[in-house]
Length: 77
Image (cartoon, rainbow, N blue to C red; front, side):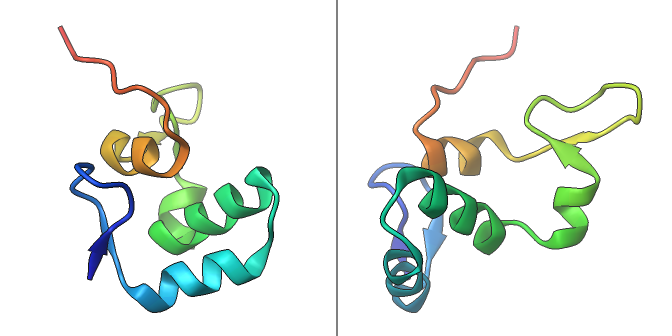
């Protein structure tokens, strides 16, 4: 296994990396594919980036989201 982004602590298999690269060349296509690889359909259907909301969504793992998108992690107070 190897890290998605060095220092992220999020790991995947080399075959997943190769499939992601083969899936598409645009950033949006690759991000969408990575989200599907890293999170189950059940988790995605009950979650969003921040959690909460009217439906009481769970928060997707910030560490994994950061590794996929490069969005900065916010420290909790």
